[in-house]
Length: 156
Length: 104
Image 1 (cartoon, rainbow over the protein chains, first blue to last red):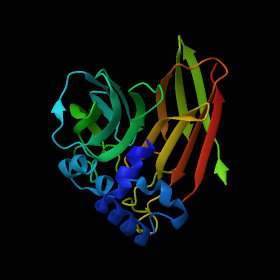
Image 2: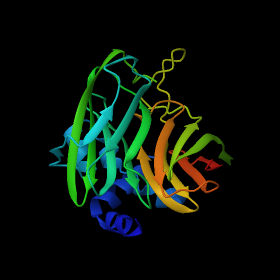
Image 3: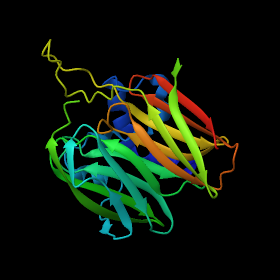
């Protein structure tokens, strides 16, 4: 992970977004180590920018990613989502909601025996595809599932 | 100041199933206060790290799309009863949150 982070920080783009985040007061200077926070991906307003910002551009669809989410969510403020990757060598996962104002919800790196599994509750502003992207053995994969939302939850 | 979390880690075979509940408003920065009609500033947990006996197992970044009072479930293979699972989180204002539980 350290190696990854170092590579990450080397990239000028990331350094730039850290500076922007600092200027915007998003990060306190003491938190610069935690500043691997991917401002460009999380700030992206559409899913393709968010995916490429997070390093998932060109992800190919895979049936080995299982997304468990309700068909219909009555409350978009709290939508339970469970993701399991059956792709061997899965090292990281990111969750996006295509139609949210900022689609990227979260990313996870799995290390030291963590299984490629996450259960989380997310906000959805409206009916949308929930997309999960996976990195495994240097390749990227994705899968999507539509969740219908009756009351949007991006206000809260 | 670190604030607490509710955590549970149940062993299934050699896999610890961990559930974490954090208390946080997860304000997106786009919501208007109904009374003042002003935007409520963004305030959300943006980094979460989980460890098993001090070794990092989950390194996560979160945005504003994670629900209020976040729930996180994850699984760690190779865990034994009594192992320590800890979660550390930081929000965009620098506040720290932490929790620890023994695998049971």
